[in-house]
Length: 205
Image (tube, rainbow, N blue to C red; front, top):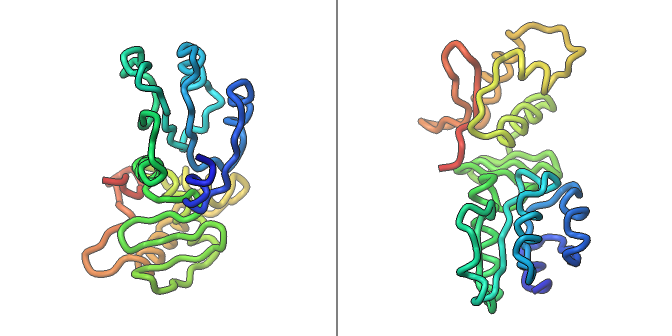
């Protein structure tokens, strides 16, 4: 299974169930694959653990004889039954990551023809590089990693510029306008204005 997952170009760490909760608290997790234990209550406890990274989808692997005991309310993003082919496992993980984050990796955010490489601070529209200032990049990164949420200008100032920045809300409007001019073409809208509130990046469809 580890080799099947490494084909996704992800770093894979395999841990025993006893160490799973500690591993879940680690940073930079793209996805979690959890093999159901014989004791399903222990499995459920891990699914509901506060240590579970909120943005990382979780795929639960179960045996055929466990299916009738699985509660449909368990907070797993997907479920697969042993034995599962490597191709199916990879596809399920890719789809789970996409549904959760709008991208196939925690390092590259995508929406339509827009791609943001977080690791290398690069932005592409229709596979063409786009030059952004540092603050424009940080503003876009923040909105895309919080898709569907509306932020006031004051909230964006605090989160992107920092609490020690004393500029006015006009700063946000100027950066949004410049950012839109660089990444939006034709009728494409990546950053929405919510009247009398602020801005948001739309959630994945």
